[in-house]
Image 1 (cartoon, rainbow, N blue to C red):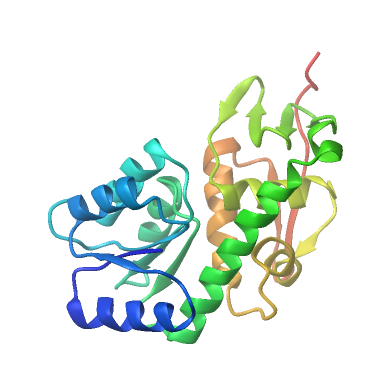
Image 2 (cartoon, one colour; image 1 turned 60 degrees about the vertical axis):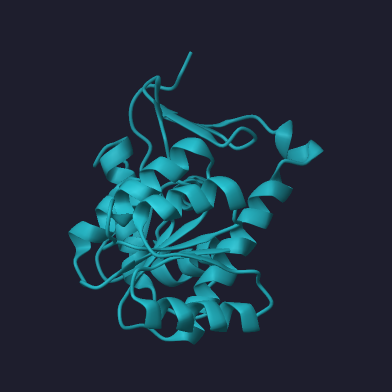
Length: 230
């Protein structure tokens, strides 16, 4: 596990807690060092601060993801949805706003790792032979974890892909935020509903604003549109 954080007290606190959880932890104090640590250490997950000296966390995430997909949880000092959406757009899977509880950080990281393990397990004989999901002009290849709409491929983060599949398996059915949190994020409580909202916005930006319908106060539904392929 890699922690990229320039504030020594916060970096030390995170590293100690994650080490106590049984993870091997490396720490980098600036953006360029974070990119190099990710390249050499090949961590299973990265905790990445947005504001870093050298290059910021968004550029770190962009460079890391270009070399090798890896789950990234971003830390931001501002509760700014724009920052969150930009982070998700460059490949982050989750985010937390400072200050945060260490218990919640650990829970989020464990959920991220479970999703990675689940995604790897999906490529079994039965799943790899399953036909793609074709909903209107949307095509989801679960075996190769690839998505296209109207013939144009969209590059999704692992979390975005899992969220899209969850919605696509029940098209035109409204799924509550709580259900999506449980099925996609493996969260047992509803404390992360804004995380769902931000990921839906990221999907709309990549796949079109008409694909996912909002049911205010309840949740979201995937609404297939366009002409099916072939």
